[in-house]
Image: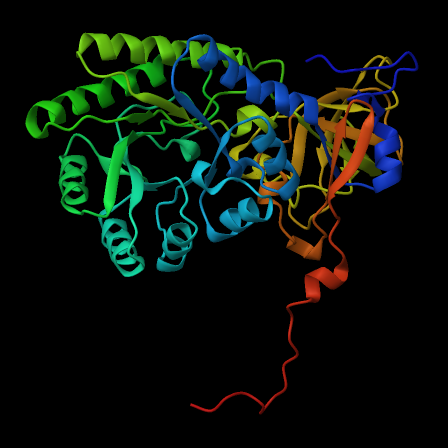
Length: 437
């Protein structure tokens, strides 16, 4: 992996010394290279424009949602996926155009649907039969209509970790195609005058390094749409092939260039449209990690160094599973470096431990570094997705600050939590003062 290093052997992020950021804002600290976010977003957008294909590239905000990042996403012309009232609220606070917001979720409640309909968002991706009933009632009550996609499980498995597979038939998400569930859902939606079905949606997994799975999923969707056209005279205006495009966490990861994913999808949908004599639909995709993952770096300060002779040497840092749960949850792998010793030989092997009171709080089990000392600043790379988004207050640690860096300038975009923030919602308990039955 290539990193920006100055002549003094110091790690630079978008023209600013990483050590300077750590000293100024404290650690743990999430740092985002905004130009990388913009470039990743445009890699998708530009490819669709070059092919003159109607499309929506919707940023999956679950990867990292904050007012600032959604403003950047909007500046780059993307649409937006949300999966909760909180993510929708954040989008509204960021001034995101409501007509470009899509709502996901396998268990949308009445309040979420009411909020989505109230603000006239662009689309709801319907996930189950109960949701059809809820949405129908909300639309009737508010006297509105809503565009929807049906989320289906095409039975395609991506080459990824079992916990993040979502496209196979046995999934908590969507309507199964092979059993006839999807067709039954289609019939129910078509019967409702307030629900406008635009097409189908699928998502086959995450951290995918090839295009075969996406192409197979597109083929499955088109076969279904072709059948529905013959049977019901229905023509979809949208085919949404989801996200899951892989990024590089370590040297072992060899993902495609982002525009290659878009290129393959365009070619496949064009081919299928011609093969089935089906009107060319608008292509929607949902990159999240692919846009922000490699743009993020987490900075830590080294605390204790513990050597166990002939076993391993532990480096403990001032963060851990509270700002990056992925190693504990998925056995995710990362690379790291000492920000002030980028040109020094990495002759020592270390294990990077977090400071939570859990033996499983290990960020990296084996990493080669120069000699590490107390007070060194450690950078862990490609932490822009599902780091801050999944952060917690376990052990009552504060959630980190987030800084954006662009063209040599840095700006705080999420403040570090204070201890007062953590106890703000706590209430005292007084024995005998509770409400009676």
